[in-house]
Length: 331
Image: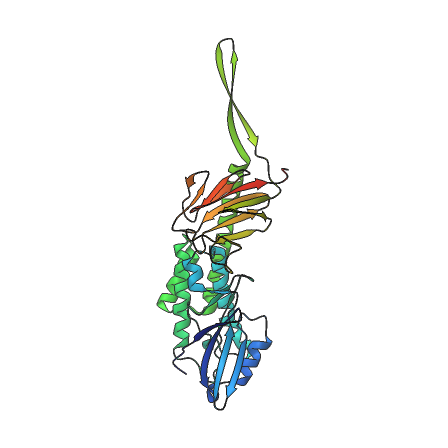
């Protein structure tokens, strides 16, 4: 089956993709293997058979297309690397499940990121014959994803080598996976170093106290530690409504796209996925995800994709929506 054409339906709060095909094209054992092996990142396949025609049904409720997740900046670099790693692992190991990796439908618009489980979900086409030119599609697909990682600002020799191998068609999937593991290790080290720098800057503050002594002004600089807040509450003003959210999770996405964000904001000036609040130990940070109308902390507009430390009492503004941080117990 060379031409693949899905139709999307939305019914009873469920979003599904349907694909019509001929009964003779299907491998029944493949459908059973996909549905039985829950550890695989493959979307379960429902079948509807009428005479000689079959309909394959894939439930994509709670999922966002990977293309949209990338466009909306709702997926971090670490999550993106994990997505690529999962896809590579699946392509390499699928044969041990008696399934053909060439039958995974690798298309960025039909690869899904589950925003509930934070995992990638793939479509498997349970056909007897392979999808035409699937092997080359695998390499082109992986190359596109690795090039997207470069846009996150990754400067890593292992990533450059993996890209070169895919471009020149000289590397195997196994060798690409090995290099990706090295990239993930390097990014993890960079992240740890960044967190240490931010933590050090957040913990230490300098202030000046002025006192008089025999008509001389003495300027005294004292280094103090900021109080750590056990957790913060986010107080949001939406028109006449005020809502308070306890920020006790590691990550919160904010925006107007309900179902894809953790904190939905019903205001047209706010982006679909506008920004992200992160919590590490007792410290909080905010990241603007390239929103059109911007994010502000205490009146200062933030640069996109840059981490800003948050403190008790900070005023945050997402476009026209105001909110502030209210701390609970200091420790």
